[in-house]
Amino acid sequence: SKFRFRKETNNAAILMKIDMVKQLVILEEEYEDISLDDLRNELPERQPRYPSYPCTFIVYSYKYVHADGRVSYPLCFIFSSPMGCKPEQQMMYAGSKNQLVQAAELTKVFETRNADDLTEEWLKNQLAFFR
Image 1 (tube, rainbow, N blue to C red):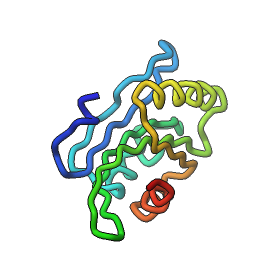
Image 2: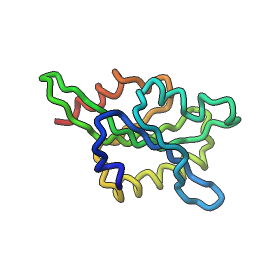
Image 3: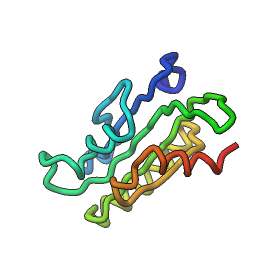
Image 4: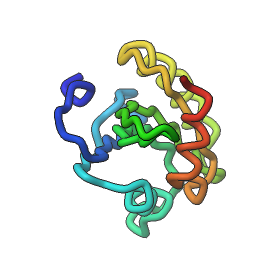
């Protein structure tokens, strides 16, 4: 919740995952001043230290410069579920996703199946649907 009311004007991110044994959503990592390109490289599916392809929840505070020059800081909820993600994990994430979105009152919710999609252009295209 403190994340929502940040005063900083840079991009920031929280990565969360589900502890499959305890069935709890846990905070994996927090990043300050991180671009989507850098964030994409931090995703588990990109990291050699993760043998599997886990799903990840990302909350991204993004400095969004609109076409007319206005600046806003939308809070984006991105659900990354890579192709190699196990079906039972996907099911658990899908259920938790809805709870998280409601609890945090997040309105900008996006999904990606491929970390390569996670670019600033992709995010801007997603955000273009919101006014």
